[in-house]
Amino acid sequence: MFVWSKLSAAKWMDAWEERFAGNPNLVIEFLKGGKSIRLRLFCHTEKDVRAIVEQFGGSVRHMTDHEWNPIVAPPRPVKVRDILVLTAATRPDEIAAIQQAHPKRHIISIPPEMAFGTGDHATTSTCLRLLVDVARERQGTRWTVADLGTGTGVLAIAARKLGAGATFACDFDPFAVAAAARNAIRNATPEILTKEQDVLKWRPRQTGYHVVMANLFSSVLIEAWPVIAQSLAPGGDLIVSGILATQAWGVFTAAASNGLGFTQVIRKGKWVTARGGHLMDLIAAGA
Image: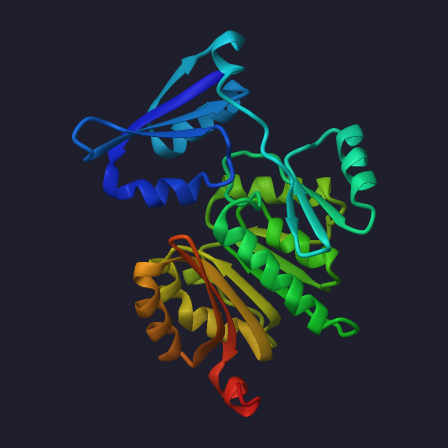
């Protein structure tokens, strides 16, 4: 076993939590004085920990099994509405047991790794709940999906399980794109198109997507609103998250200036998730 560690200013704690959210092997300690934090992430393989160092710097130490075992406990499965179960389990026998316990639910296997999104973070879990609602409303129709900032690919995978048609998933992080592609195959949704892409430089297809999901930092969302508005088809559903409650007003004001509005806003802890669409569509629908 290996441990990656890095010192950081305490003001960046939210960003680090978001980056590694869902990974139960992350430990954040406040140092004396409270202005600095120490990050530690425990990894099974040297390849994983070296990839983190390559991306974020920091140091690596080899650990014995005796040091590792008391620290890490596997995350519990996450249930979403009455239709999905997300699990970190990957072994066929483990997944079969979970499926047997939940015969009417889709099982999605997302092992914790560097990419964000295993379902237990407030932003991901709330996006999934809203996605289930959208899917039920669109049942019996053909609907397409764009998942911007896909991370592990969990939202795109869930969309396919819930009946979506053509699904596009992108992330600027090559490690996330690789993880999303692996998870798509692992969950029998290999038809998801995954691509390394900076959303700010993305050129969406002209017809747009019926459902667009963007679980991104507030600052990125504000810059990306013009592209997101262009990517959303008329009458489309928009699900966004990654918004700190303290920054929500600025994010939604910027969205409105790009013709986007929200009819459902959910706060969970310090995070905000919202569902909406084009303002003209919402006005026409009397929302």
